[in-house]
Amino acid sequence: MENSNEKFDVLAYMRSLTPTEKRDNNSITLKEWNERWITIYCKRIKQTTKEAYICYVNKHINRVLGDLYINEITREDIQLFVNSMSLGIGLKKPLSSKSIKNVHGILHKSLDVAVENGYLETNPAKRNDLPKISKPNIHALSIEEIKKFLIAVKGNEKENLFKLTLFTGLRAGEVIGLTWDCINFEEGYISVYRQLVRVKDDNDKYYYKFSSLKSGRARRLYPATFVLNLLYKMKDNKKSEFVFCNSENTHFTHSSLHSSLKKIANKMGVSEFRFHDLRHTYATLSIRSDIDTMTLKENMGHFSAAFTLDVYGHCDKRMKIAGSEKMDKFISDNFDNYIW
Image (cartoon, rainbow, N blue to C red; front, side, top):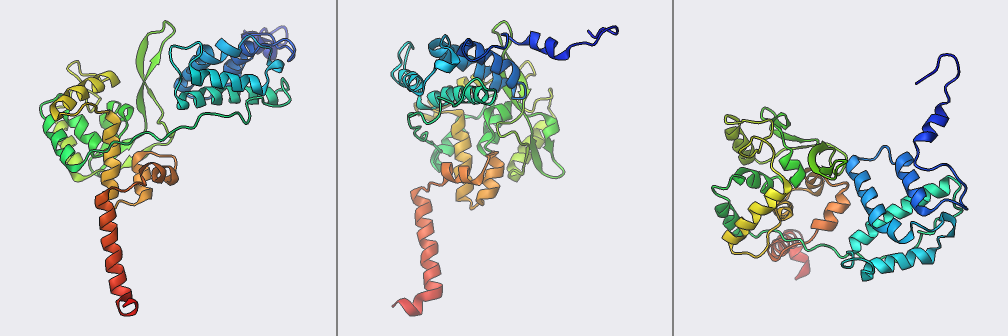
């Protein structure tokens, strides 16, 4: 690539790789800018995140705003765009509040970089009125439901996978991507440092690949002895690098987990059962077992303890009664002679 007789123009070569020539803000459309932004400024994000950016940009942002020149886009234009997604205008159905926030967030990031590069004076995506995201309903299994679940999974090819998830709270991608090198029997921990994700290739076909964790930070999980014993019994029959594998000795897929859980739900006599409910159940069992918030935060792989408390800081009736009894004892032990 480099010519020994003349100086190689690196910058000119790199510019030739960009999707559009550099133009001033009077002649570049948002579609052209988004393509430039993704190509040049999204190099260091995870591949799955980049694919999500491309999908949202092409499916929503460029569809509505792409033909506008970047310096002509107003805050009102973006607010109307947000409103259109809420109403489902030009879509098969309205987008969820979370999806709208994701789309707007990507547009905001793109335009922030445009401001930094002098294409815009201010970001018109600032201070838009976005729909509020309601907290998802968390369904944690009760003790009786856990018993029904353990009976229903018996004999299922994913029995041990579901048991481990129930008592460790691993995410779906983490558990299907669990390999034997992650298990340290001597020190009694599971190393969670990657997950399996489904991605598209250049021909729009899906395949699985290892990716970094959602939090971006590896963790060590010290599970109950039961979990380690379960894994130890499986070790003698291992046929794959994956701890949990199908008849072809390869990893399970997200769709296969969903399919199995539908059958298990029927056995339990319930209408709906999600894989993530097992994770919620583990968190609730941890709180009932008086596991402290910081430990639970680490086990769940959350960004912060504040997030853990926000999601799982609720108490069921049994926990509230137990808390009341503890307070009764504390008052009686310390203030009995003063309050009566």
